[in-house]
Amino acid sequence: MTTPTYPSIAVVGPGAIGTTVAAALHEVGRTPILCGRTARESLKLQDAEGVVVVPGPVRTDPAQIEGAVDLVFLAVKSTQVEAAAPWLAALCRTGTIVCVLQNGVEQESTVAPHVPGCPVVPSVVWFPAQAQPDGSVWLRGKARLTVPDVPAARIVLQALSGTRCSVELAADFTSVAWRKLLQNAVAGLMVLSGRRSGMFARADIAQLSLDYLRECLEVARAEGAILGDEVPQQIVEGFQAHPADMGTSILADREAHRPLEWGIRNGVVLRRGRAHGLPMPISNVLVSLLAAASDGPG
Image 1 (cartoon, rainbow, N blue to C red):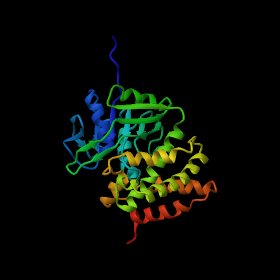
Image 2 (image 1 turned 180 degrees about the vertical axis):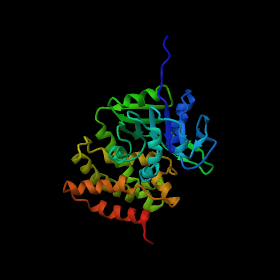
Image 3 (image 1 turned 180 degrees about the horizontal axis):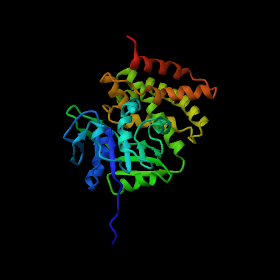
């Protein structure tokens, strides 16, 4: 029987999402190189079934990288791609696959300039993972990724085969990515209210969310996404079904006074809606408030 050969792997950005993927790989004996801003001896993932400790160290100097790898999981925020560029330069050679674990629908155009000659595989991350005060990560659901059904994505599928993080290949990735973007976009309301998922139980917030999501839906369709009229209601009901204390990454960034990913979660909807000549009354207000919350002044 032939033993499977797996790609060499690095994870850049061992935050909540990066730690989850690193733990999934480590559990099956494919421990990746860990690269980040903060030196740590190990990573820790907790879920309902226990704890997984991923041995480090987390490397903090790209100059210490001894050679390129076959696959890089880029798990930094869109606001951190420029800062992560030295890692990409150190870890990538022509043909290295870069799987981007970020929000938004512009992953390829954002990352590709930093990795010439390397296929960039965008992804949709479906799992709720939250960083804890002690530096560990709490995984509150099943880990799942969706990637486009393209040749480079087969390497991602191979790397994560048999792990706790399932990978789905989507023939219509545009529709999947825009549906997730709608979910991320309406989560921006949590930033402006300073509240978690429980706020969607309010009738007024639910209605505002539906109105905004319907506005976003028209943009998604103009961009080629095939999404039904039921999607806004489904997304609101999804938030209502979450535990009342469930947060989101953009809210965590706001609470920590970090820059917000408002541009790739909400601004992109406004920009593309305007390009298509669509009315964007809610976006016009929401995006300005999110930009001010992130960038100031004041």
